[in-house]
Image (tube, rainbow, N blue to C red; front, side):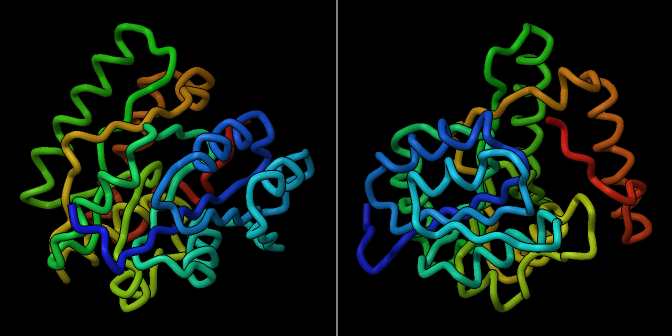
Length: 235
């Protein structure tokens, strides 16, 4: 694996994440080949910022909320050649940076994602996520799209396309994937899996969440805008 001259920054947007952020950052703090960890908070009133500062000195607070805004702000303050956008409740394996560096050793790769599986999942939830990951793997060679839980981009290409569309309350990850894929390869890292919490699924129900995903995605593809006006945090 050629990791020479490549550095990696992880950018994590947060809002009221004191329940999860310390666990995620403690995993990252012990990860090799990681240049920096950047946390961009959207005005949390709990102990999110205090917890984050125990693991990194790059913790920023924005007055305006918005996941695209937070990710873009973190990217502009990052020094890594490769940017990994990670949600606060997502736990990657210990070798995830090596897997990313191996993928980006191909200079034609501009972006990437991987399998996402739920933590402490029930059978029907595991079945759904296996199906969803298989679908993403198939689409990677046709019309790639990506959830923002684990989104990787080459920094110079990310900045050239002006990052995430801050006007979108959701599907901003899919929209950026479309634009990046016009500039090079957007790939699915087949031998990498990250694990996310099921708080939204448990609160709203699997079918409801999937229905919201589909409605917003289809609306965006057809009309260029989403059905949802805001993306409400589930805490």
